[in-house]
Image (cartoon, rainbow, N blue to C red; front, side):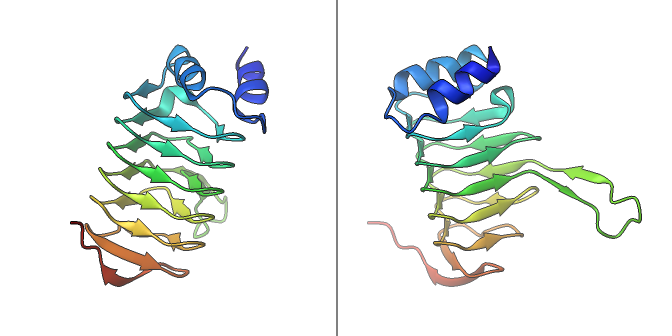
Length: 159
């Protein structure tokens, strides 16, 4: 059943209703707020490890590889092709042990197109991770980050 919902509803390039996608995510254990939008070809590995607040927008071809919890606050935007990657390996050990840490995107955070957020990172309130940027450490509130690794470049002013 999980494979059917994933391939025919979420990864489908056609614009299937966001309401149906949210319903199915909830059916499989996700905690979803109201007013969310989920665009075509989204990949969410484990719905039961996803929590999203109100008015979240998940763009085309976003991949949420949530081996650990992924928590989205209200009014979060994850732009096209972004990757939230909770799992990795410990390169300091000969056995290359598996490591998985949660990702938190606080209220108003915006992850740019093709950007990557690693496990253990919190993108604080209204922070922005720019296009193709890579967040390996926490993003401070109301700050815009760019680059690989992401560095602060500007304060975010909201009117």
